[in-house]
Length: 178
Image 1 (spheres, rainbow, N blue to C red):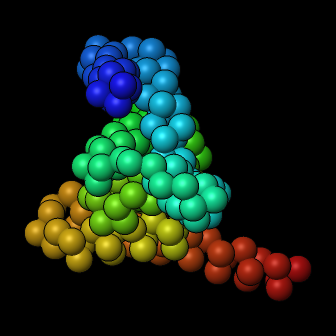
Image 2 (spheres, helix red, strand yellow; image 1 turned 180 degrees about the vertical axis):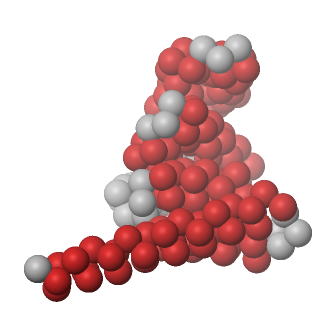
């Protein structure tokens, strides 16, 4: 039964990947969403990231379920991948808040995942969350300091920060003039 359920989850993700490649983003989102529903039923997390799954004996009255460590790892990996893919679709659609949400969900599994961090950075900066975008790009530069993409993103962010600071300065000067 576990094998069949895993196959169903993986098929949803693979189907989503095919739709993504053919730029059918709404269909891809539906498939990824189905895979996420399947995985969350097994390995769900509450709003602050605490495990609420049958893997955690603290939430199931001490009953012990036999799920292998590999099974748990596979489920969490699939959930992280689907969240990353959903984030990418929302970035393509320029839905920055949803992209940020799904990037954060992927980062909950691995806070050093480069794709998730870059997607988080992209969404945060497009939402004007400069500090969050800066933290993400700085972490990326510590992970992969030779990346031209990350260095360029950092330069762009610094320019955006200077521009924002200049606008704020001008606004405050105008407030005190009149």
